[in-house]
Image (cartoon, rainbow, N blue to C red; front, side):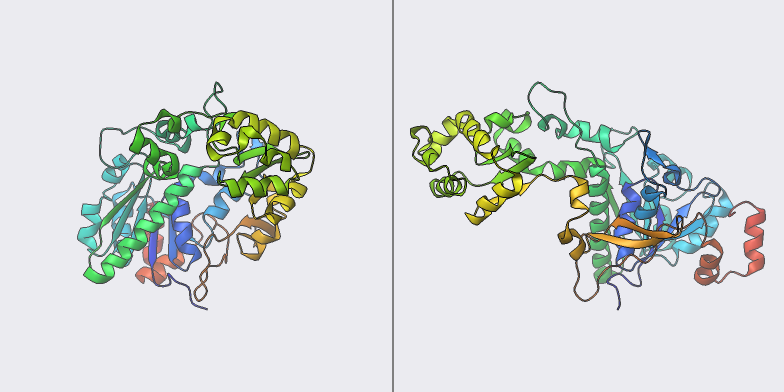
Length: 403
């Protein structure tokens, strides 16, 4: 079965997470992604065996999952000969992807101006920390960029330190934004025949993540939307997290009279529906802390599963708050290919990986291979893509342009 992006060739000159995950989305759906790496050292993510001293497995899942379905070509772009070789690849590429700093982009002669001279159809993509405009130009990681966005100050209870959302969320969203920008630029090129430059930043991606509360703040200036809010003081007690007898759970119900009646019936707590403190929407908001305390008491008498069953039976959205351990056993995630199993050559066994977040009925994505060994495809790419003879490849090795 064909894939949606077959025929698109990507020169992926990125490292770590944001850039590689952008090209991973493209590779999953058939793009020919060539991960360009430095000889000897390669992508620094190849060295990740632990995060904050916590081992993350006996195989390098950090690098291998993000760089799945890709080829690896090792080339020294610091050398003039390496740049000249790379320009020949640019002539036959659709996308150039970069996240190793704007200074190095200029130093290594890889700017949009340079590459578009070689190939006017090239989509030139940068993944930056804060965007290309403005004066902010400093080292950027997911965590220190998130610190600028207001997201941290919305997490946790009042009086507690701001909380990092975690999980490399800015990198993951930045990668999605980058892939989205690439697809838009490719669509525009189909109409005009011309490429363009694209930038997706950690800053922009995390502002998008903050949208549900950022936009209300921009519209109103109300500091309610910019500060931590105690669980015991949320305006709508029917939309809140509660502790069941075994674990935390979430209830999601609009603060309507009908919704409150249904919730009370589902919890077999009809006396709350007639309590004068909670008669109307305004009453429930004014006496929110008291109602939360009442619901705390009742929900704590049953397991999360029992509560969820009762509430969903009453037409109310509710879910247990699960751990990754519980998620990994959820058939829903496996049935939709959100989680997958594939063979890992490094440990010679089947491993579990995060899968495909998008489903296409006619041109679905797949995971064919995990991340490649450093430079494993160098010779074959040069032969097939550029038609190079073995003698020319040996000369490049002698010049230490390729390993």
